[in-house]
Length: 390
Image 1 (tube, rainbow, N blue to C red):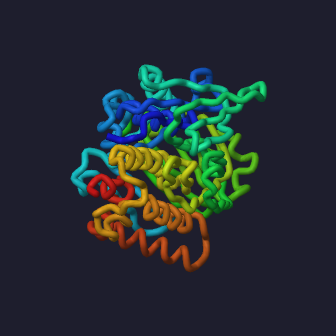
Image 2: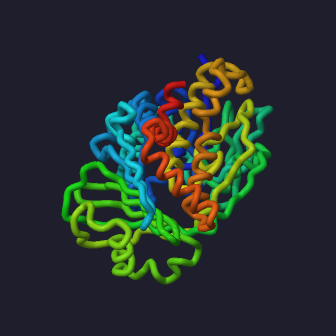
Image 3: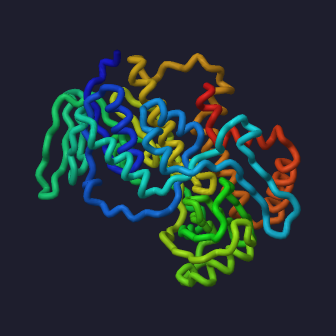
């Protein structure tokens, strides 16, 4: 049994709430700290989030998947191709012996399910509208700043988990070096309604200015995600007809006709890499630990794996520097680092338009399209099943 009893989770987003719930399920006393109150945040985020097979298994282990599954849609195939270029990759769940490559769920639904689950745990204490200020490790005292500028001290805190996002104050307290990467790309996310019920197929289409993903998010609904060169959609994303025409030009009508389109978000794309190590009384999960390019849909999935890894380490009651008995090669292939490298390569090949990257991207698509072995290897990375197998 771990000597750690009371844990403060800093950050009330999806990763923070998931971490809070997972640790509470394992019997830890939890203090959840956030500068807002998640109970008061308007939840109108209709975009689809894709949970990997690895995430599903981890969520099953903490008893949360049965609450999520009724609201999720299995993705059984993913088609990847480039406009006007020969070859199309068809990733299929059957090739990996899986029921699905991933599970699509509305962000609003996921947030509500996790929020409710956290509120039902009696061993969770909420410290809302407070900022993380300091943690005195020698005294196990957590200092929080209130709205009026005063300070609240919480005693007997054994461990801190930073889930406070890209600009993490916990990470700064840990004195970890971080590098920020500007992908020089913009993302436009929204939803489109079709006339044919989805069959569990997602599409990734590469074109001259970036890429488009269509992800099933309901019986007749799809989330679209454009990732394009910075400035390409300047004042353009507000033109729904222009966006719809571009979707039709790139994808045609694999799901029937398009009835309507709604734009939800637009933002510039940045990533971060943290020279990370667990400390005796600190850990990071999710975007606090590092953010990656969204084209591989791995952000939240890596956060869930961070939480699972943290629980294993806390329950082992060993210090965080002990090495796993798993071979180094298997450790690397199932690690966050390998997924980050994979996501960076995908971002490079999707984003850059030079002769060299064009050639490599097209050769890669052709090779993966014709090689079952390569498809399985790429599929294992995307689904995270190597992490589970380890």
